Amino acid sequence: MKRILVVDDSLSMREFLALLLLSKFKDIGIEVTMASDGWTAFDAISKSECKFDLVLTDNNMPGMFGSELVVAAHDSGCTTPFIMVTGDEKDQIPPVARRLLKEVVSKPFDIDSFCVLIRKTLQ
Image (tube, rainbow, N blue to C red; front, side):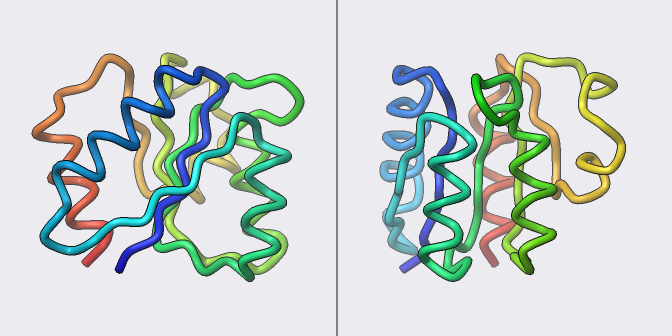
């Protein structure tokens, strides 16, 4: 069973990503946890002692940006891979966060390519 944390302030995007993951990765078993902002996500990461296999996060969210979440999680010792799924341009993501990300996926994205990236990351 692989555990994935989906972080996005848009409920429809969180639900879309969760349904996509649950439908495309039945063969490996997926457990999805959702968070609506960076602070909630950081709390979930801290409480789980970073037991997620992957974190998918938006960047532009109220309270704590996804880029800030990536840095905070890394600084707390989390080694879970992060993929940023965002409508922001890559150059809007601070370099320190970009270096810590497995990948930046621009919205809208190709579902098949996205699923290949997720599968490779989870292996």
